[in-house]
Length: 69
Image (cartoon, rainbow, N blue to C red; front, side, top):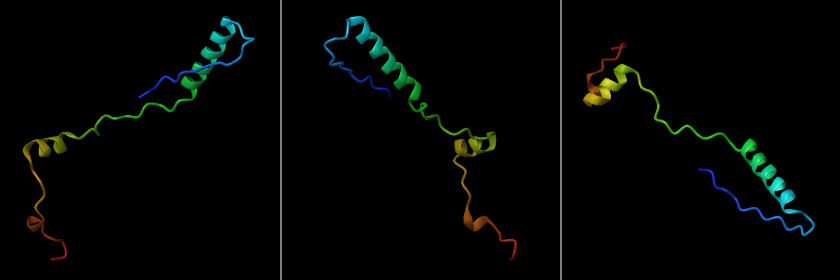
C-alpha cells in the first residue's frame, strides 16, 4: 500500500510556485522509483487440480504401489 509522505520545505527564500515545483518533482521521483506492486492473486491451478480440490480428493500413500516391488 502506498502511503503519501508529508513533505516540508524549510527555505524561506523560495516562492510558493518554487515550493510546489520542488514538491511535485519529489513526488514524481518517489512514484518513478517505487517498487512495483506485488501480485497477491492466488496461483492458477489446472482443471484437474481444481477438480481434485473441489472434490476433496487426496493421494492415499497406502494405495500407491512401488515400482520396485
